[in-house]
Length: 393
Image (cartoon, rainbow, N blue to C red; front, side):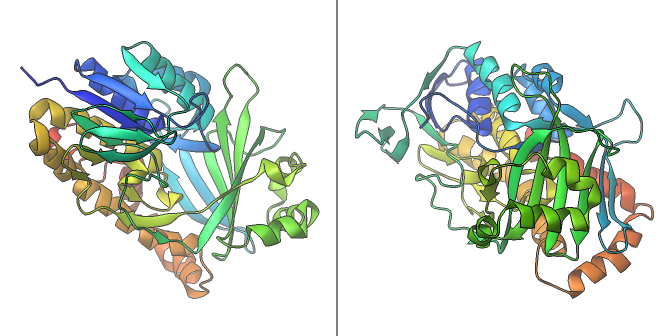
């Protein structure tokens, strides 16, 4: 019989709540600690790839997420000056094939949190974990909780428990959520427009927010990581004029932004913990590895980490289980991080020659078999077995 543990989860994000549900199903006693007054999501839209959707299905959150999200079959990007395609990736051209699930973080959070509340899991709000030692967690108010057999760090990129020192990336993006307008843009694809590599505009149809039926779009605009104050100082009119001159179809989306606070600045970094665990402590999601969002894998990596950890604890005990978790995820994580590091400068950088290479060589080659099939495997998250020796998702 598998040993049952008393487990603390630091952070009620996508990965933390998912691992809590998976471990509760295995009979473990799980307590989740989160810093907010009420657990809540942070950010705008994202895409849950087919492998991530399979994890959601395992905790009973998949149907709820799909009911609020929007299926996308394609990622299409064009170059602004010549209006020619330079990115064209299909999930599956069949109408009943694999799709990405574009969804607002609030709707995704609601689906997962509802699944957690249906289980015997303790969730403590206003309880930010600032330290983990000797099986106990110390909270921001100075109190401690424990002892626990295992502490799972799912506190994200700013986790105080993670020793990861990541490398800041030179470009980030501002993100916002607006209503889906009257537009010829299709609702089954992520559409992007580029000016060389120093400007990227994107529109992602993400379904509806919790308690609403109005269809929404996540919009984003890339910029150097330190340029946000200059963007605010220049004013919304200047931004809208620049964005719509590059991509006229963006106008009805940009018109809905009336306050700069509607757009949130996201900065990215790159790094990986060589050993994402120590005695009694294990890191998952952004606390263990970080990359740019160029391949749309961030949330999916957290979901896969959660499933891998739950399975590892089912197969082994103590530190052997944590080592098994780390080995099972190592190559999938490293491969996608390497691809992200290679792709990102082609779309977000000050380089003049990389976008020329992208448009004149890499894009044409990517459309020749087996290029399209390889691109599909990359975005679906199946280029390598996501769980290694721990089996299929």
